[in-house]
Image (cartoon, rainbow, N blue to C red; front, side, top):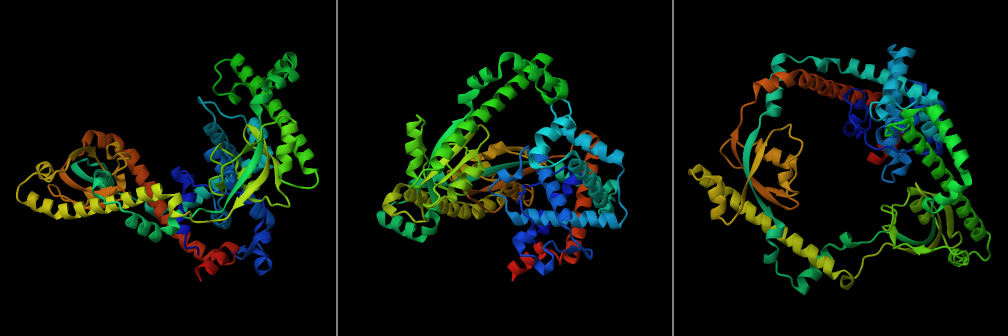
Length: 551
């Protein structure tokens, strides 16, 4: 079906491999509204059955919930997530649940409840589970979901897990000899030396002239283009300015009573960091104060917004003038893009979205909620995409020119050194002496294997996968060719391959073999998923969109 399924298939494999899924996005509208009711049915069909509104919404909510469980935030707060990625996953999930249903795969109520309980336990801290009542009230209800939605989510995950295990079953057959060979391949340590050709060591060799910088600027104009940007005035109503008043408003007796009521309802489990009931009640008390403070902040933000929005004529300056009369501070952002938002503070995604929606006819927005503040904003100016003049960014262009030229010099040096080094090693010279003779600084890396996850000694001069590729494709006693990197490049020499510790292997092998089975199962399942999606998702909007894009 979709060319990107192979790339994203691990998103679904998390059900048995425990992988972290990448981000999704919540659209808030159905595909029929976006896709114009393709084929008379905006949701398409799977296995010959039309997809209903409820089918689509349920799958969408399940992904929405899954993202929160993985990231502890809702996906609509991530402006970098693309709608098409979520749409793919919704339809893949629909396909899998329909396939499981056709095969008679089901789970009992008890199994679904156990799975839901395990998820709630994973969300807790200090070994304590999050109470379902708290989860429903604090997480599900604000998004219009219920405990039944959560139960369905847990149930369908178990169903998909069973389907994945069934379709990937053939990959689980691994002989003991295969497991041992794979373990030794992944865990055999290698001792190696490396020499880096870093651009920073060659900057002094770069001749900087006005003509060369100007030519570089002309050749790389696109790199200096500024995106569309906007600049806004804003008034912030921060919760911290209302805490003292909120505490007075609630009153000590009322606060204590409400904190006790919350403690009676949710217990210690709702405050995992609290060690005693008194600490838990104090946290509930602070929660009530912060909640009241946010209510008070929103009230003042609403008052300002209402007064500004009702003024005529409608001009952006009304915000600053009205705020000044009220003794409120008005701040001006630096120009910012839709991708990164304001640089002065961590603005909520809605702040940036609202700012780019402002016009001279409708120059105001707000109150915009943030995690601890509400904002009322007014348009200052919009700046179209442009390329700054060379004189405006000469220092930056000069530095870029030096870096590019120094990298090229470093890579030429490494390219010339590699074959000469190989010849010297063949003649009996050692790596370190050959490097020193060439004025280079050799380094000895700590022993590492294919299973090594990090190697701090690289210091950003090369990535671990680059070094692994070079080392594990080079014979013992020989050097690699020159490997180019963003920093310049490197050459490695493999000194020895160390024997695998048999005692450690014996202890690790059962868990390693289990992981290897999951990996093989995943590969087999992904192959099935690709083929099944090609057949079954042809009558869905997501397939048609990608087919049109491919053309």
